[in-house]
Image (tube, rainbow, N blue to C red):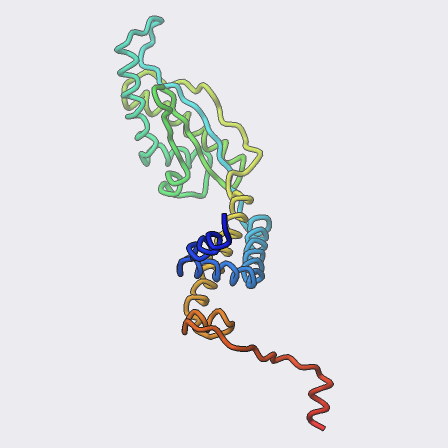
Length: 245
């Protein structure tokens, strides 16, 4: 391959204006790296202090109910289907004010009925007749007591009001050892990433609206003609003093 062909390939490999602007922005970010790292680290530090020192931990405890439809030893397919449908109906029993009020009275909790319902979560795993009763609280022991009491009160209420067999408590809630919220690592990581993203966007806006001519490349970009010479601005302190004298 001759030198002419090499020169032609170099001329054909022209960088587009958009690529050039992207490279300029990346070099701009490289010079402003501290403006990204410092806010990100500060926000992560603040989030860590909040998560470890000020955030109130919240605990969850779960009890399990088995919704029995037939008391016979032999259960046919229709019993299973009816039991599955009834399990979906039983979930709404926990939202009645009677059940929540009875739990409040038994445990002497300082909450209203809407507050109790907001702390309660009922789940029905797919293709099962099991209800998961989860109660959340800032106190670990209160969370376990709330879940177990809801299971007992709801079982009696279903048996008495809906005229069906009493559901069985197959698993009582245990006192949780670790809080579920706040998730400290997630909180710190989110604060770090959000702060870094905001800093990058602010620098991008500043770069986008900065129309000052700073380098020879900026002159060539605007006029299409490069500068003939460059005059250095820096001078030594001694030469400045001598000129003043």
